[in-house]
Amino acid sequence: MRNIVAGMLLLMKEKLCELSPAHDKELLIKKEILPEQLADGTVVFKGRGKKTVDVLQIEERLSSLNVVVDWKRLNEITKLRNDLEHYYTDRSPDAVREIVAKSFLILRDFAVSALDEDPIELFGVDCWSALLETNDVYAAEEKACHESIQKINWKYSTVEDALKELRCPACHSSLIESTNETDTYPDIGLRCKSCSHDFQFEEVIEECISDLLSGAAHHAIKDGGDSPYGKCPHCFKDTYIFEENCCVACEDELEFTECIRCETSLGLDDQFNDGLCGYCQYVYEKSMDD
Ligand SMILES: [Zn+2]
Ligand SMILES: [Zn+2]
Ligand SMILES: [Zn+2]
Image (tube, rainbow, N blue to C red; front, side, top):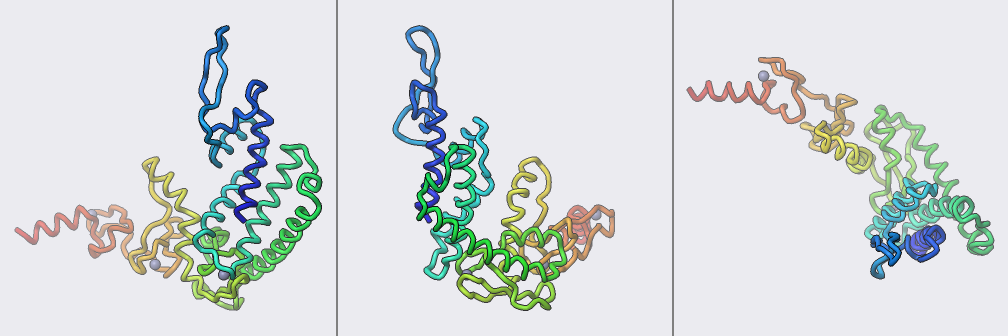
């Protein structure tokens, strides 16, 4: 698994070497690049030190040179590899298979479109057919899981979106099937096809929502806006979705939506003052003191 990811990055570095200028064919894989003035006054870039580019720089440089790669998928693979370092057990072959399958797609496209190579020639028949087979097995299992998950009524579009983040809490595989298609939301039984671990959707809902929305929340808050989700005042999970007007874990709605005194709209943090906003609560408490 590590070798495949490392090998994939190596191919991308190869492309960077190919695109490097003639005076230094390793320039673009150097982590640090500095401008230097030659005797005749022209400015050229030189690499400094022995360190080579990291994943982020590979993406930056290849994108800037118009080399097309499915970066979203690549980032998913590197994240998965890092996660697996923590989660990996010998019972999670499918999580590894997933990395192989997803890498396979990138390798194939990169070999053909960026390196102009025939992948079978580049990797050799044995290696390539192993990748191909793993991809086929994984793709078939993924399809079966997807179909069983689709039979459930997930009720909320946010939850439907979040299902792509669904992973086994024991082995981190994404091959998850539902155990009973008549289960009703949110009591849904799930089983990992990779390690046979049975679990309830309830156990993973917070992580699914956070994986789906934490990036958007981070950006929204940075721009002075509001997070699309927050902590439910009823079940205390981070699963209250503003767009759904409810918590997707306990399905509770806000008890108080506007202040009973001044009609200001009330949010998640204003649910503990019996329907008063923070200001009116303050005024009320002060009047009690007098
Ligand atoms: Zn599992
Ligand atoms: Zn809740
Ligand atoms: Zn008020």
